[in-house]
Length: 264
Image (cartoon, rainbow, N blue to C red):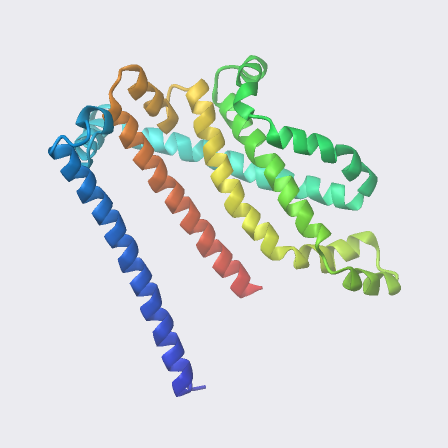
């Protein structure tokens, strides 16, 4: 079926708009990096404290040669993905249990709120004692940060299901499981997908927090090491690597969302 002239113009306009947005984003990043380098070269900002793009590139090359940087990146990604899959799976299952058991949901609601507002880093020493100074404590820290958010987000998505659709199925004597499967979960589809984006970012934050406390490998370890030896080039390199990782993970979630929504 051929497209009309108006459809072609609309698609062409959308492509131009996307291209314009991409160009503006690239210009902003380039302007920031050039300004940063220029201010550092002219000593307007202290290059020792603020570093510079050139020094960060040199530091990255040095890290690649001497510190096996990709091994640190792989470690952080590995821990993040484990925490992510555990968090989203447990969050989904617990949200279902709470939705099916309204009394239980009312009982645990204040505790979920308190746990969500509690700074998880405060539990770091306890987690280390319980699980040991190893990868388990890092994943546990990340799980504590992402799990509560996942439960609350998905559960609220379930609660926002159209009540009239639920009443309709009840009038046909549908069971709780059938209502959950046929109405509640499909109606919360976009909420569940959105929770994936939140969960992956919270998992990365949790992993880095855990690596700050106890780690011998990972981007968080590199940042702490750079702070300890007062090498801010390593610190800034680690931060930029984290920004790049978070961007890649976000884009993967975006592509996944577009594909799942399209299939749906």
